Image 1: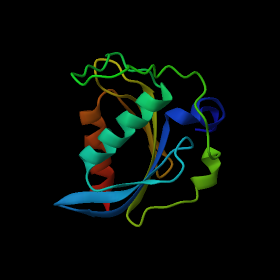
Image 2: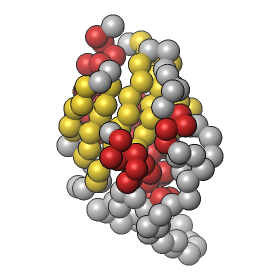
Image 3: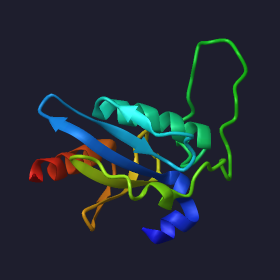
Length: 143
């Protein structure tokens, strides 16, 4: 994981799960390009917030162009080096009450995420959000 922190930490998400039950998942999302952590109230909220984050950063670049019927200027989201407010290592000591995940989103092809999830010194590759949800669910149900 250290290689990613040095090279592409804006692709990384540090997710602290503070509450998990059959009816949902709640916690905090950290990224070095966020001024402060983002609170999430369910798994879908994680994906919405992080899609917006990656679109703002321009990394990882989406393979689909967003369309809108709203009038206004289209802003380019192609930033090679987004502004970082923190070093990723600054919040690695933040822990969720239930579980903590580090997710590296390498790409966003076919309107889905591909990358690596780190949890409890284990590493899992995923090729879609659905696969990522399943892996997260397996870790959460271990305890």
